[in-house]
Length: 177
Image 1: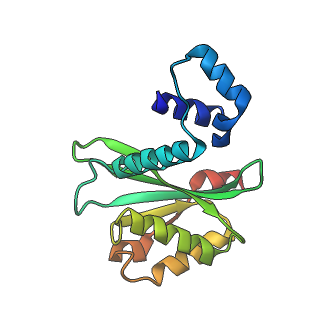
Image 2: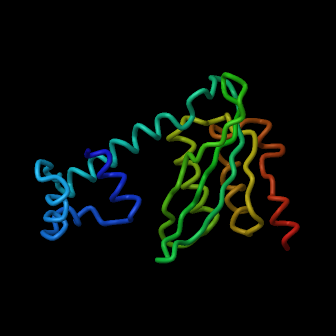
Image 3: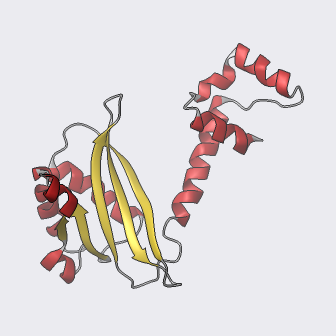
């Protein structure tokens, strides 16, 4: 049941502290008097544990020595929090095309290219993708050019192919402009 409760809380976007609300507890007791609600802290721990399991499976089937492509995009939530999404594209060990969201990172402060490069390098390091990125597709924001220059400065991060043609501006964004 805790897994189902975690899914319920996240899908309804309820704060975990809701489980400590007296009325919420009474409602759950009406549904099942034998069920004991975990604490908000326990739910947070379970969410982090579940996230770690999912994170470890994102690149399942990605073979040693293989290359992949990344696409990134920044956006802001209705509450004005900014995020950088990083999607990996690769052919797995069974020769199936795969897409995997490997990073959904909070952007604190300004959206400078230097800041975006720092965040992207963290995602690449966390997933052990150094020297395995063929290219990165971005929209046409000027901070992405700065980000790419920053990425190219790190010789341990990007392979020779990437250094030649690693930045791909998104055709859909070009057409839209």
